[in-house]
Length: 70
Image 1: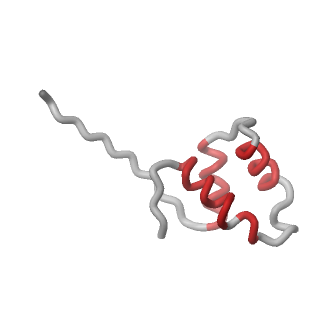
Image 2 (image 1 turned 120 degrees about the vertical axis):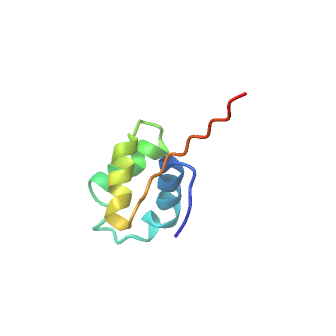
């Protein structure tokens, strides 16, 4: 298990650590498009990043809000 502070951070890690090791036939299509969109800042939604991450493992996103009144 790895912990990240955001979906974007997790996706960036996946692109640098896991994506390069995938077989060429798996990298085709939407994964290549997602890699290009992320790498060249062409826009990729958090929903699309989560969808891709879910194909290769379990992803759990938790939001934590801390409020301390004065």
